[in-house]
Length: 312
Image 1 (cartoon, rainbow, N blue to C red):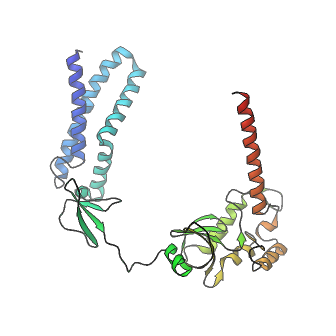
Image 2: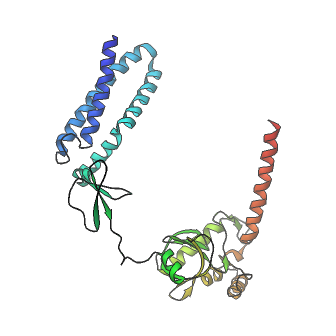
């Protein structure tokens, strides 16, 4: 195979791939000619694959099977990444399936909605970009409800449902992370032992208990403490006037913090006498467990540093 033929094959591969990318992304005949764009795009990809097959056949003869396969994979990945064909194929296929292929001229993004249409969507204002396209920036809605963080900042109270749980006493409500005031719960990875001495993940059990209490029900919370981070507060939270802290401590999956408040101490005593939750087995209280974990980590770091210095 002559040098000119090889160069021609490489150019054909690049040209076919580029043509396939333009066709499959609806950039050849406009967004209204979805079928035509796809047909030309598919033909371009086929031509590129045929040319690639002939080139690889030549390589196979001179450098062997395994090396050729590696080179082929590398070339295909590079072509797909450089030309964007992979994304175009996925987008075109998705468009044909859900009927949105003709909407490639308007895409949602972090700035706004970019569109070739001169008509602005409802609640958006048009802004002309440097490249001549038009972006539609959302108009702020003053009547929109305040987020939990805004509510907490304005009134020291907020409402919302739990969207994520860190541990049995810490969770997320909208844009606010909440620590239940006056109680402490085991970390998500803390281990305990049941009454038969069998280990179990009490941290996850505490999370499950909190999830059972809260579900998707809206909470009403009152901020008790806040720090420098506006997205983190300590609060007392209720569901239908039922204190979640009381529920967690009474069930034995969280503990009272008497140095913070004595409110939850009687509920902890009841849980202890009934053997509820973690009180039915052996455990370290969360603060002690964290201290032991921190000490173990420090020892591990010392050992690692010691052995690392030996081989310097």
